[in-house]
Amino acid sequence: MDQYLTIEKFNKLLTKWNGKKVRVVKQEIDDCDELIIDLRAVTYESNPHRLDEYTPLHSLQLNGTGQVENSAQNMEQLPSSVYEIPLEDSSLYQFDGSRFSLTTDRGIYTIEVIE
Image 1 (spheres, rainbow, N blue to C red):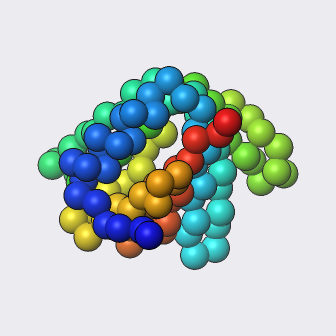
Image 2 (image 1 turned 90 degrees about the vertical axis):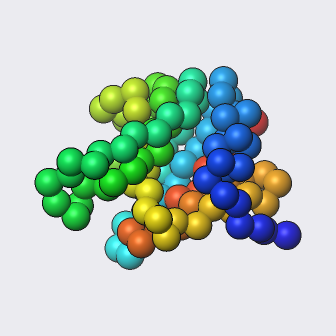
């Protein structure tokens, strides 16, 4: 059964996946992106001096090299070795035993290990 996690519990479980290959799927209203990343570290960033509401106050950073699916459904290298997921006070964190689900006002992010 899915259960909601605190950010601390979510972080503790997710960091156990460091060194593994993970798939991240981002689903927004009219957009779905998929990327594969060799997860080296999980970090967080705060941006208290943001310039607009589009810049998140906090973000989850998945550090590692990887590939992202482009509009032609081909895989290409990630432009940087950090993939950021914007976090909000209202973000919901779940883990069903095999995959994480992170729900924000912008969309739903699913993170799972690729065997």
